[in-house]
Length: 373
Image (cartoon, rainbow, N blue to C red):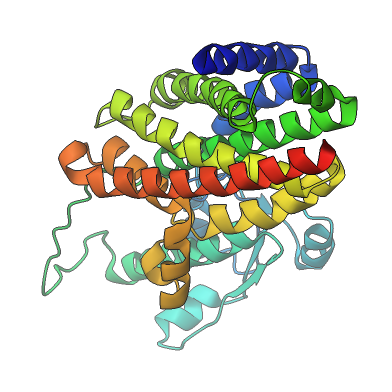
């Protein structure tokens, strides 16, 4: 009887979600276009950075330097007079403006140390930081080759042979895609369960449930399995179709094992959503509370910054968050091909944390139901 009640109440939750077009659009976007955009929006390297060059020398060396900037790192250099540098940068047309002074080649051959001015628009942080290093390398290489009259480079005293594991091309999209799936699983599971509870309270349907022969455990369990099943299905679609299919991210381990871990993680996060739904009295309050919870879960769980780089106290505190263990097992399975013999500690941790969160949320839910009755 209890299982039948949980099943029917869960079907009711799914029908209610189906009649909410905005939630359906949010789910569809978060596990399709949202993942693709997050993985590809930030370029992995400098890409088509706009650069202007003022060539006051008009020498073979200055022309050689100008021709060294080409796609895909830089756009075609705009050759401009010096008077246009500031207006162009003020208008945002150029990220870099290189000024080659008069007699640059002559001073260089005479043994002097001429200076080239590089103007950088630092409001474009990623391009400014990376591009300045690229330009320095290009200038040093062209000047060195011009002075040596050949393109040979002296052998280094020691050679470093490095091997990159799990991401040989250092593609940022490989990391960003999986982390976006994890973040969306956490966010949507909390949002769906919390919104479902608040929606019932605002529409008055929670009072109808109170007069039915169902227990608070059955009501809460139905929301957990229904919303968890929706997010898990969306997670499976995103992992197979978007991450592995569209973005061509190689999955080294078992997708089924990853989805098992995601299901256990959903058990914890949906319980968190129920708990937050009992605290918030309206959707605006729930949205503010969600911001306070999601930011630490995303930024301190190891998905954006390695946990080893965080203060020791933060590392210990975040062990009580299910996302910390989910990020670790997801990276181990999907990137390194780990099996259950490697990630079982994370599975146990998520089960324990999920059980604690479920018990706390159930207690709070019973108290809320009792006060309404």
